[in-house]
Amino acid sequence: MRPIRRRQCITVGSMATEIEVHVTARLRLRRPMMDDVKSIVTIDSDPRTNLHRPGGAPSPEQNLQTFGEFVRGWEDHGIGYWVVEFGGAVIGMAGVEPQLFLDRECWNLYYRLSPSAWGKGFAVEVAKEAVVVASVLQPTWPVVARTRATNHAAARVAENAGLQRCAELDTSGFEVFARGW
Image (cartoon, rainbow, N blue to C red):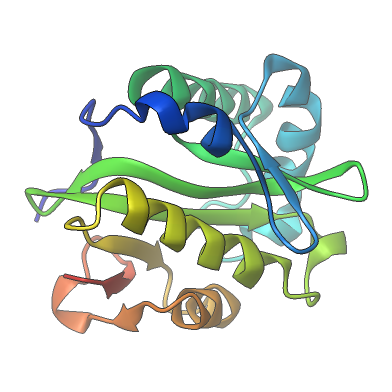
């Protein structure tokens, strides 16, 4: 089975401003900027946010590369993962990005929040918002979230965002949750 690959396949045109800065009941979601790198690398480097990742937390260099990919995702697609803010503080990254999964165009749902933000419903709040935005931008594409079998919290977020477990799509050690597959 083929892994998710990045793909340039969507533009958002007149909706860009609404998508680049988006507000939910408690959160401000916005396009990442290079000024965010320190906050995001700190969150991504925390061993607690990598409990279910084989090999543990990525190196700072790997985190910088990943953050650069998040920024480029916006440049390539006109949408990508948002920086998530609560009370003016950066608490993580989350959202959707167009990707190819098992040869099908889809939305990849991603969420990674600081441990200080866990247990407050923020991940579900942003995941639900991302699913809504994806459905407006490209309603025929499924939304897919992949997580490790041991990451029960991430699985609950996917289910609470409206995705269902799809064991037949599991690949490369990941359990797959999807909506509209």
